[in-house]
Length: 145
Image (tube, rainbow, N blue to C red; front, side):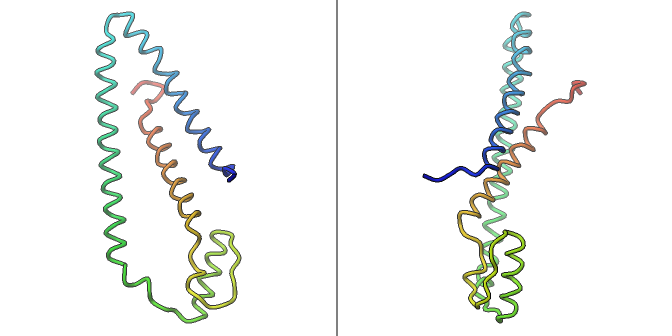
């Protein structure tokens, strides 16, 4: 059984905390609008904001995905370039400094790239970071402006 990384657990707890805070701040507003008989006004406003956020979020991810696809397509041939041994060792040292992996001393371009699992974890980390930023951008200031 694989262990879940501690950093992932912390990020998920932070996301859950922000979601909890959002629900706690919205619930009294729902009750207030319902008490005045204007619950439909609240729900129309809420649905409009949610739909707008979803549409623009989806549009952002489509544009970002197209950007990544185009950049990979444009750089496809340059990945197979063979470098000399000294430049390979420099790249290995750089990767070992960035990712904390041991930098081997033998030649070979395949040892230069980090493992696929690390790339997935990094992508998840950035996706969760963008989600947290989106939550902060969607929150109102305490003064209500």
